[in-house]
Image 1 (cartoon, rainbow, N blue to C red):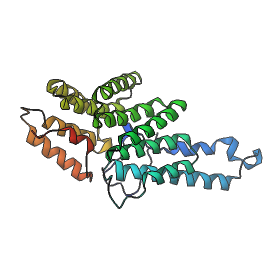
Image 2 (image 1 turned 45 degrees about the horizontal axis):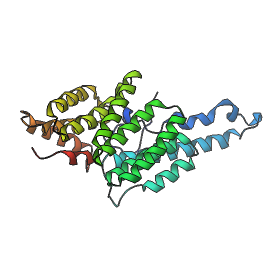
Image 3 (image 1 turned 90 degrees about the horizontal axis):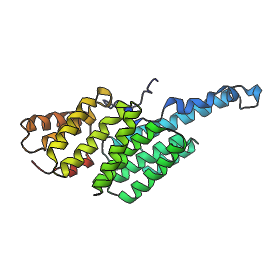
Image 4 (image 1 turned 30 degrees about the horizontal axis):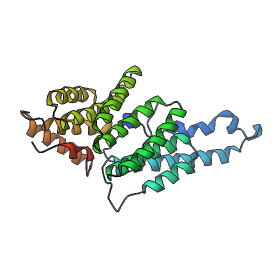
Length: 263
C-alpha cells in the first residue's frame, strides 16, 4: 500500500505503527456500483468531488496528529485544529474508521494535557468502533495509546496487562511495526517501577524493532529511557542522541518522560 504524502510535515514520516487515515479509506467511494451514474449512483463528477472532499478531511486529521500529538504541542495557541474540530472533520467525512482514528488523536491530546478520564472515554469509544470494523492492527495501535495513558495516570498494573496482551496480538499478526511503541511503554513502566534489569531488556528489544519510518521517534524515546537506568555507562551519549533526534523532529514535549527521575 502506498503512503500518502502530507503537507508541512518536515522530517516527520508517516508512522506505520500509528496507521494514519489512508487513501483507501476514501477510495472505497469509487467502487463500481457508485462510479457509474447509469447504474443509479451519483454521476462521476459528483463522486470524484466527494472523494476529494473526504481525502481532504482525512489529511486534516493526519496533519493534526503530526503537528500536535506527535510533536507534543498540546498547549500551543497555534494548533491547526482543536480536538473538537478534528472530531467534526472526521464525522463530516461520514466514515466510521476515520471517526475512530480522530477519536484516538483526541484521546492522545487529552492524555498529553493530563485529562485522563476524558481521554479514556474517547479511547473506549474508538476501540468499540475499530472492533466493530474488524481492524485488529488499528486496535493494537490504539491500545498502545491507551496503555501510555494508563501508565501516566498511575494505573501501572493495568497498563502492563494491556501492553502484554497487545504484544501477543501483534506477534500473532506478525505486525512488527506495531511493537516498538508497545515495548517503549512497557520499558518506561518497568523503569518507573525500579525494575532496571527488566527495563533494559525490554528497551533493547524495542530498539531492535524500530526503523526509519518514524524519523527515529521511538528510537529517541527508548534511548532516553535507557539513559536513566542507574549505572548506564553510555548515559550521556544516549541523552545527546535522543535530544538531537527529538530536536530534528521539532518535538516540544514528551509526556511519558515525566515518569523518569533524574539520574
